[in-house]
Length: 110
Image (cartoon, rainbow, N blue to C red; front, side, top):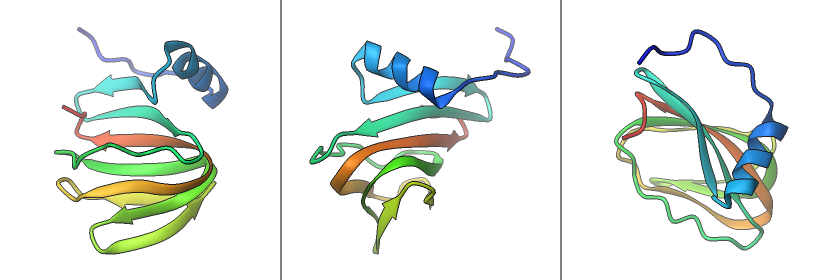
């Protein structure tokens, strides 16, 4: 299978696709070096993710919550950028506004 050389997407289209599928997470890109997805949690929702085998970057598109990674604990909101190393326990919690997050795994999530 040939990896794409370019893709042009909008958050609105990705969010619509994620909602239509009824999932909290929509992976929209996968190449050998990385994968990317859109993750959403509702107000009061529970983040059930476990540590991943890949490094991650999160970009908060909208919403407000708290985020804990290892011993770090911060309030996050639209515009927040978070890095979590592979194997680190982390989660979103106290979700005060519906949260929509762009997630990038490197290498691709397994």
